Image (cartoon, rainbow, N blue to C red; front, side, top):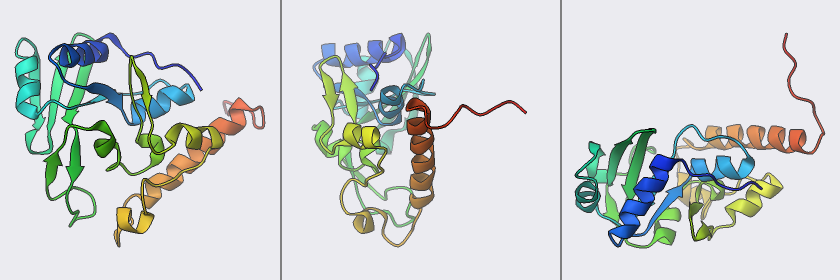
Length: 188
């Protein structure tokens, strides 16, 4: 698995939050993709700072109040935009897609526990990976596992099942290419 090269803007966001006394990590798909050797399309940051503390920490930057009730603020940096979200625990999902409520927490592991798949429940900063659910191992084995019980996680709404199928296909193709079992697609 590959190293994680955090873009300058995301690193500045993490450093700013840490210098203000908060925990901060890149999290989710950007960590997953980096470990697979795929360049992430975007970089999300999670933090122990509350939304108001995030806003205060970046009072000298352009910020977008993306979703304050869910703890998300977008920080505009020279090299792009970074969504910064307070560690949280999600309430019920009456629409099977968006939480009805959230509760902010100060522990990254609690935040990671709310995520869908183990491969998305990985955080990283200069101190290393936080991977309490074995996401890196699942990536290496090309396995998709839920964080917790799948029936509890997805209930009657099967919204994440198509996403899990897409992940499975992508991981299998990546694994086979990496191990020389299939060739890259040919141009037609």
